Image 1 (cartoon, rainbow, N blue to C red):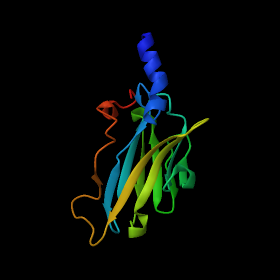
Image 2: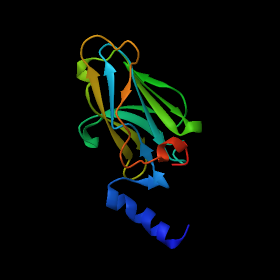
Image 3: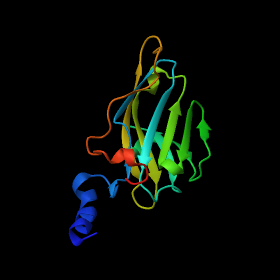
Image 4: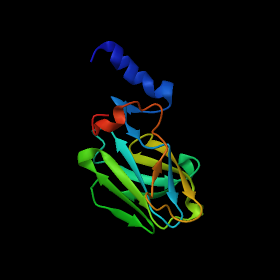
Length: 158
């Protein structure tokens, strides 16, 4: 890595409002939609080096107002009520599943990684569709962050 890249990597978090490792350190879908009474799954990806950090899914308009479901740095699935979270180190991803969706589940949630200083967090808007459950699919993604480019599909090499 030459000096120009070092300076860019140092300044990037301050210029963009996000933290990165090579590319983005934590990303996910900007918005997901699921059917009433159905199941919704959200996948968040993180950069290499964060495998053993605590991952979490929280709900709140801001990160300071989040109610959290956590998993340890291990790959054990953790369930809390209708929500589960599973970390898969090999693919540098964690998956959150929400079951028996209600309209009250709609709102802003966050994929998070607990670390010293500022946590890594990525906002995800969840919309529960009223009416009957969708027949074919229980999940509709509405894009990844416009800032992610193609980095999200490289697994741990974010």
